[in-house]
Image (cartoon, rainbow, N blue to C red; front, side):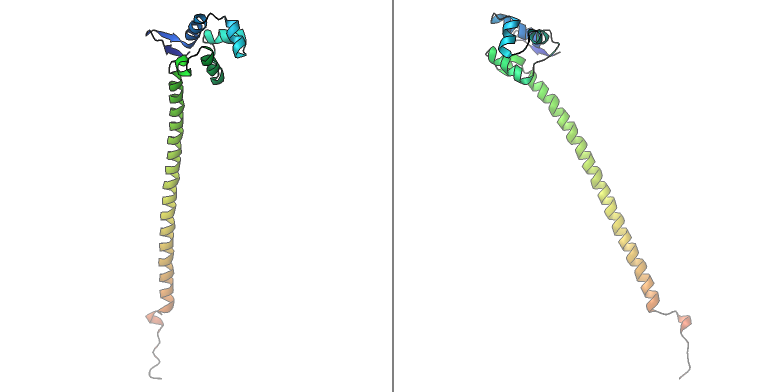
Length: 145
């Protein structure tokens, strides 16, 4: 149910506001329905807060009653936008966490690669140094020959 603040300070629903506007113009539900190309039951559902008009029909209502959409909904549009913004912020927050996770994984992978390269280089260097320098025990003195 959408509750809106009336000018006189009382809290009223969208349906109450619609009834007030319709009656102030001397229109029946049938007349409003006819002008908006909807059924009388649709107007009844809006007035009893069982449903809300689409944005297009809300625009048509605001034109019919010569008030702004903001006035029709009494700033309820801003609360809907804020709800949607909070959803966008939640999505952005999740996306940032995922990106941070990938970043950390990438850094860990990079560190592992660097350590592997260092270890491989050290092992290769040690293996080559054994091939170049023969062990002392293998040197045979042939005695002046």
